[in-house]
Length: 246
Image 1: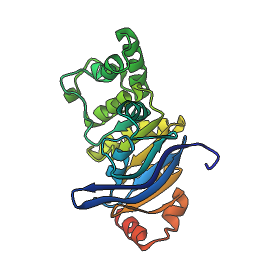
Image 2 (image 1 turned 90 degrees about the vertical axis):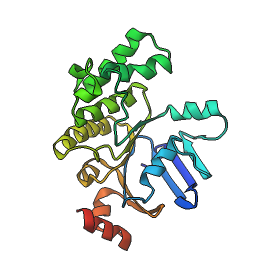
Image 3 (image 1 turned 180 degrees about the vertical axis):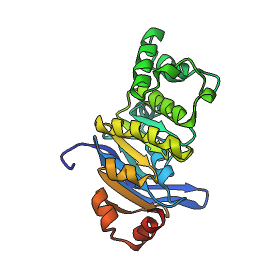
């Protein structure tokens, strides 16, 4: 892992919401092609951290670099860096008035300025990748939650990101729908995509992650390969968390 170039670097990152100190000197590096699962109790800063990675939230101190490029030089440079990262949210965030296909082609035609035929070709290839090409003409509300989340993954992949960020992608799903989304994420992980996944799905962490990161109270408390993390956590805070979810 150390031989790979860093895809994401956070160095002394701090984030406040008013008086609340959400991230406290967070330092973390993710290598190209590495799959990192971030876990921790509610309010520990997990989602805030990955939202800062693609600047959906602006950090107030420290530095974030994506493939060696730092945020903050200019709005144009920030936008170019942000395009390297795809984001999948808890609540899907699909446009309800657009079909599945239109949700996937919108950014391709408006941001990348691709011809409509090319945008449709790319969108359909990714809908096939997440195993729902037949849903292309439907609207999001006609789909199950698991299907909507797979559309959200396809939409993110359409922009050809080098990094994929997942913010608790299965937390809004019924139990029977979780596996279909995790199966798609497992396939994506197998393709070599750099992935940072905030989740409580510890089975996914054991199967897919190269490293598990545990956060609490805005800090990175512990990080280790899955076998070591689950079998021999070093800190009491980690052991207590694992005893509650395993």
